[in-house]
Image (cartoon, rainbow, N blue to C red; front, side):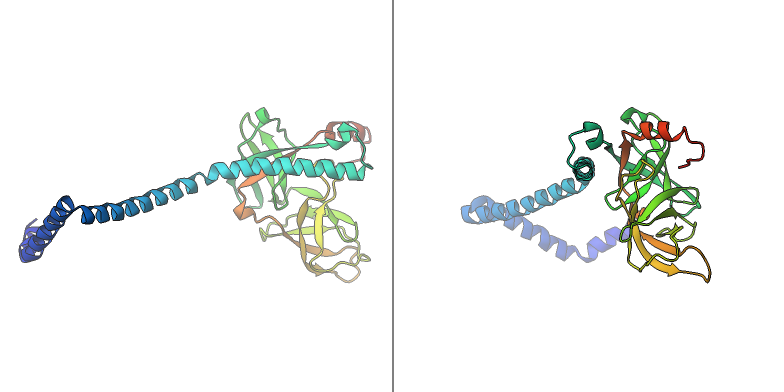
Length: 276
């Protein structure tokens, strides 16, 4: 406190001058119409700038709601695209069961891991939203994983970055299918297995979902081949695929409801040797 008083005493002339300046400015504004108008115009500009900044901040914090709406719109558009694809593949059939094979539910990621061998993702949609275990999960970039379990309002998803998850992939350029599985090392790279050595494979080739399981729609992007190895006399390539989705930036996903999966399972379960 003593230092504060000493500071004020040392600069008493400056503070006295400043107080007199402010008092004079107030007198001018109060008694002169022109200067008063100029002052208030300037102050209005300042206040307007503050209000604009405040609105920009409100707009920024409202981005979460905007993102939710965009995710829902993305799900609707994806369903529309899937319907059109089904129409094309089925010769423009009007069979609603074929056209409406898949539905999509948008969800927000509330928890996610990428640094373990068995990574999982938690989303904010559950059984009350019609989600059940086994459903595919995708993003606007590509395949994400499969639902493992649900509660009323949340679901846990087995991430593509989980050594226990396998999904069917397709080499888009040639049509050859294989198995996608993570090896537990790089969170940006998965393995693409069981592509025969006679197939012509090139770096940069696109890998998509095959659609064979009935869980994932056909044609969902998985990634692109970044490394090719073929050991002497090995029957299959060792292919490393850079995933399209950066799992460390995963925010919104879509859960895929396969409306004909039950029928497919009911048929294939009658053949014991058929495994997914």
